[in-house]
Image 1 (tube, rainbow, N blue to C red):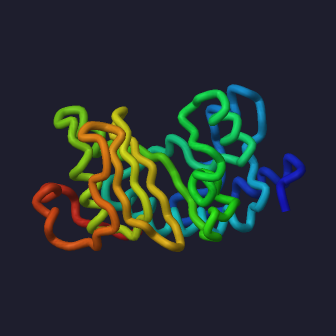
Image 2 (cartoon, rainbow, N blue to C red):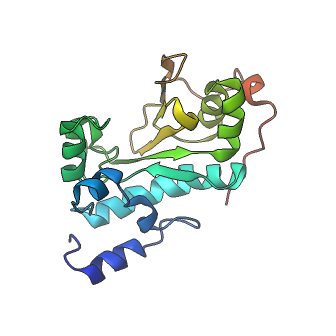
Image 3 (cartoon, rainbow, N blue to C red):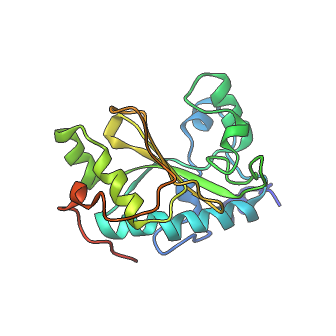
Length: 203
């Protein structure tokens, strides 16, 4: 049931999704803050379920391997996302964000998923020099069970999506723009792209 009191919201925020992450880490929204509307799941059970998979399978390995990662944007309620879309704040429609940033709604095919936009400071420093986001994309492709990745120009921030029906697509909004990978399985073709990266560590 949706949190309907301050106490219930505090309890929701205390839910531990994985070793390093709590639900509260994902509830902040600049859109919600600016416009003064709550960013609270309508279905906390589903949000916790998919958020746990996102954290355990994707964010924890990134955090353990590269050091602390920064959460830029994660959970959005359907109301917050719709407002962000309406106001032109780089939010896709609700239908496109179900099982994405909107964790507590199934997508049009009945799939479950969760997205977070994150920055890896270790890589952001490298990106400031190289302006090439692809090595990190290839590393994630070869090591983690992601569904979709989308890379952005600022700080090499990227959306990383866990989904119960993974598509394994990688898209760049940063140069070079467009699809980098579409459905390929991990293999050794790209290992030279990240030869100096740390070895995968699991928490």
